[in-house]
Length: 346
Image 1 (cartoon, helix red, strand yellow):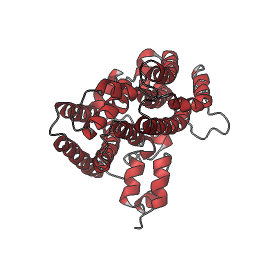
Image 2 (cartoon, rainbow, N blue to C red):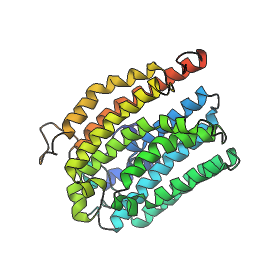
Image 3 (spheres, rainbow, N blue to C red):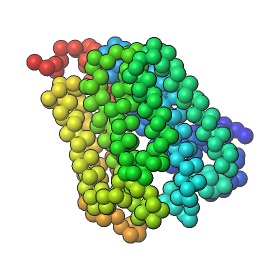
């Protein structure tokens, strides 16, 4: 078995589809983990942590090693959650009969690449690594009550997202809170070693990215709402209907940019350099335009991502938006450090 760095890069950038167990067995453990946990999507965790790191740097709290430990731990925790999701859905019979999940990426249990026992071993090993990162954060912050609360909340969401939260139409809200205000604020607080004076502004700064991640998740749940309804999975689109969910996602996408404008021109939290995110406007219009119409019954010609549709356009928008957002926050951070009097509230 050779370490396949090329597969690492592939798995981090796109969802891998693989049908041959022989090919799977030749992969190194890291490649298997990255593919099985859908790391092309879990990379959003790294973006949330990067946003928090830049904001901490701006306020002179950044330290690389603690940031790296926490970021890796949260990335692994996200992957752990996905392993548990697949295990839970497989046990409940949701992923059987060519279900939506198995059509766009590897599902080791459904494809018999792993047994349930093996899946649980991967889950437990991942969970222990993520847990150790959390323990580090607790000691680093001298057991800050806020960090303890975030740690407990994250553990609960990890355990209960697939069931019952997703079945109660609360999964989408959990996604927004975790990958937006909570992750950004909690990582910032760890780096600040428990300091909380600016926590609400920091949490608000995480809202645009959280909304962007929500748009992908909501789009995916709209894409598979018909299948979910048959399986008894009560996601938000199942509960409110496809049309309402489509227009809710349009609102989510618009709110991303509205909150950024608020943070720049009302709160003066960011400088106008963050307006660079509007370069993703064309992709935003693509996503909004698609959401105004029902999902097509058959895949359009040359559409590579079927059965994903709404989520494909949301992901396409998110990829550019998140990079521009990071670039903008980096530029904003440099301005705040070297020109601290620029764009302050008068």
